[in-house]
Length: 251
Image (cartoon, rainbow, N blue to C red; front, side, top):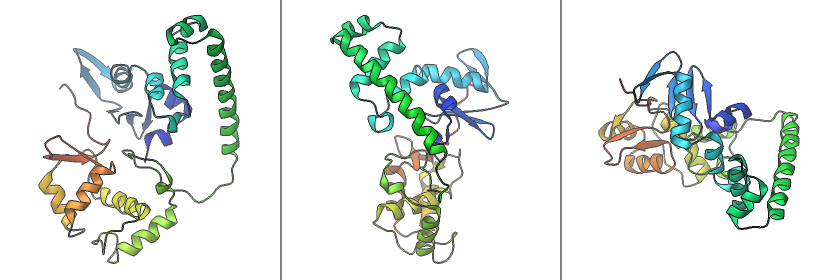
C-alpha cells in the first residue's frame, strides 16, 4: 500500500499520515509510534512532534519534498516548479523574475496558469468523488520504483494470477515464475507478505524462505529488491521489507 495514495490532502500538506497508531512519512517511510517518546539530539519528542522535526530535517518541508517529485506525479513543468519555489519563499514577482532571469510578466503568466491548475484540480477531485464504484485495483506497494499500467490489476485478476501460479494453495510453492510484468508484480507482492514487517533478516534467512517458494531463489531475491518490495544494507548482509524498517531511536 502506498502511503501517498492513501493520504488525504491535509496529510499530504503536512507530509505524513497516521494509521493504526503509526505516523509514516510520505516521502521516505520514516515512522514514529503514538505513545512513544523519542530522544533526538538531546531533546524528547512525542511521536507527532518527532515526525514534524523529521520532515524539516530530512526534507526541508512537505512543500519542498513535493516540488522535488518527478513531473509525472506533480504535473508541473520545471519552470512552474521553480516559480512555486520562489513564491513559497515569499519572493515577489519582480524578485522571482530576477532570480530566474525571465520577465516579470512571464512570472505573472505562470502564476495565473498555476491558479488555473488549482481550480481544475478542485473540480477534478469533486468529479472523482462522484464516480460510480468500480472493482478496486490492487494498490501500489510503498516501495514501488515505477507506477504505470503494469499496476492496473484488479483484486479479482490478482486472485486469478495467484491461483494460476500457486497450484498447491497460497502457502505453497510457485509452479513457475512469469515474464509478464503484471503477473510478476502480483506474485512478488504475495511473496513479500511472507516476511515480517519491521524485522531485519540475514541473507541466509531470506534465501531459506524463498527456497521454499521457488528453486531459483536468487532470481526472486533480485526481483524483490529491484521492484522495491525489499531493501538491504550496502554489504547485502541484512534485508527488510521496504519502508517498514523501524525508525532508529537514540535510546
